[in-house]
Image (tube, rainbow, N blue to C red):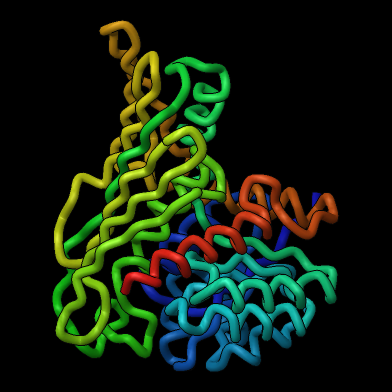
Length: 320
């Protein structure tokens, strides 16, 4: 079977985790990396055994490398649209970190170009591909906890305040909603679908003008609800509770989960599904599979999903 050759644009912390994953898999090759700083690219490449000549000092050089099959984009999300389009116009399939763009209009533009160039594109919402979350989806479909009526999910961490850093800088797309609120909203869509009937939100705006925390209430058909919270100024449990008419499922660290607890009829059952590597591998396997099968999108994280979730985020922002 052909090895899929990957390139990475943007070499921060998450790119390190992604590179570790690629280096641990047999079906893929970490072929090239790029930063706006050639020395940084070479230092990163040396750590992951990428030849110096494939450690590029510009994003343009990497996307012009004809040997690369697919590019993982790991830069601040304010640049996602621009770099996704750059890759697609240069014949590269794309896995783009979440949130896929800054708003619905941007993702629609990216997907239009993916269609025109007949190239695979997917948002890197790895949470959906984790075995435990796929198992939970099956349990819900089977009616194990009855009709699901309520989802409660939070994702918060206390970041060191830096007005020039990515998280607190408006020009770099800072704020809790886009950085970690995307996990809670995407998880709600995973459980209930992409079409809430009403959306309410409350933000706390910090001194740099970005949302340091946000609470969100999504109401679906028949009164089903998601109560969501996201923060970059507070450590939370990062737990999801899925509550149905017959029981509930608790998912600790839901965004990177490998275990869950099911409570039905007063009895608790623990399910554990350890990662093969670190959790990133499942979305990589999906990308590889889709590319080898000639698909342009994933059924698990489709273009429609990315567009409709960004529309929810745009609606949440209306109360900013």
